[in-house]
Length: 490
Image (tube, rainbow, N blue to C red; front, side, top):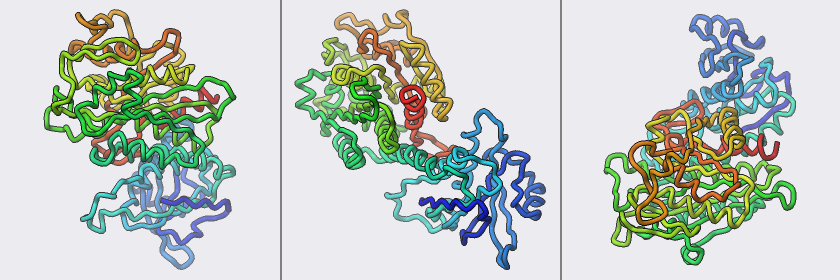
């Protein structure tokens, strides 16, 4: 989908677009909307509620034109930007596969500034994203037809605001792409290769560790997860130095289990196909790094992903095995399906040892218990630092990638003590998300602010939302980007 911005504020349906769309605040119809549309909207009970749509036809210049009104809710709402994105998303949902090729997005008399207009455009683009490369038998009425959005009556500064939003959208789409791809296409090596291609020429520095290098470093926990797979494991670091020279970076670490069968502790067959998205944390890190690099973030940041495939062949690790992590701590394997924390613990230790970050945040589709707790409305956040936790919660609220804080406590720590090693890789059934976070905390250096985001219920959706279709959501990209804007660049 292409966007063309026209800055002539007097433009009013002057394009040859198939549809002319207006964004309408609740109870405030733009002055340039004809009376017949106003009356039709009133008859259809169109109120301008966020995401509400109304269509009509008007004769203009001797030609019948198709118009659409998209509701944006209350003009002074606290979640104004989210409501504007929802308005844009409604336009995309209605016309993406409708036969319409071009939509004129008309901001004349809308009262929107550049940030508000860019929010509408961002919602439209994100909701219009689809990944159809494997579809070969679609009927014409199922295919995406919307190709171009022509923005008329653009407010001053929209070009710059859209350039910024475009970078974020690119990052979200990259994360969605990685999560959507099947496990025979995206595995540790191909994940790295796709990132290398996307970051080529951007100025970001990429570092890749292969299994021999990981073996020398003592990453037995991460390597243990992948030892039952024919696909070799990898660690990828993406570094961007956009801040002050010598300033310690902020680090983001992602779990990248490109397919999780459960290993020897194999998962039930029903729904196992969903486990291609068990690398959603790594996709969020890669996508957010791409967004921030493209918008030239004024911050020193590094994104690290630990990549492995968890499979149950004769070489796979077993329940009862004991592995030694890179930190030197030993782990008794109780359940091979509690593998994400094994990937993360070595990735976290290596990140701290290599980059000496001032703050570190990990993202992972870590526990089914988090889905039981929060469903698909929030990701869970655990932290050893109240300021960091508050910053992430605020970023979640501002970006729409919402978080809810959970406790950390020594009272839970004893639940993962092992009788023969330093710790077990899983505790009892109760407090499953908390004991997973307690496990990770053991690999954080004393005095380092750290947060763990369990996003198990957020990276994939069974039904469409206001800014995403059914499938990969891209959750986490906007969270990280907003956190860096407000708390690192700020």
